[in-house]
Image (cartoon, rainbow, N blue to C red):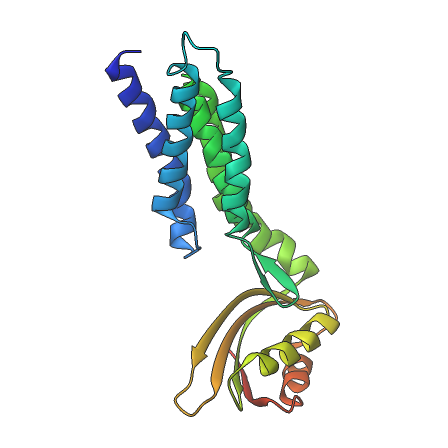
Length: 218
């Protein structure tokens, strides 16, 4: 294969992978802009190696491409994190898996499919999120930010809090822990409340916990 064709396919893979990675980077996920570029370029490189590097040999070129899909599964699993009653990182893992497919497509010269796939993924990450926030979530529950200050640091206060939230069918969307100076932790939560649970009742439930010092709604 001419070096120019190799260069074009690698660059296209990097651009398309980076376009998807920008959305993950903006939302500060574990796998962001650079990770998506590396996955796309790596998948493209493996595909080029299997399609053109093994010409004239007895090796099956499809085996390398198949192993790329398996390897991305392990990489995506590293982006999935469980926070109490909910799981985060599934969208990032799915985007990594899709970016690997983009690398395979561009390396094979199937640019139209790669471009269409990129467009669909970007629409899914941006436009469909707006639809969820404005049309779906208001009908099934309310999104709020809550700040909880624990009396002491450690796993026990967090476990106690998440147990209460899970029992109340509250979905934890995001969690940020801020260590305090007096051996306590402040936790910032982004929650989706069920329609039957109000903010006042949720605050009262949290305040009753022995490990909780204070609760405030952002």
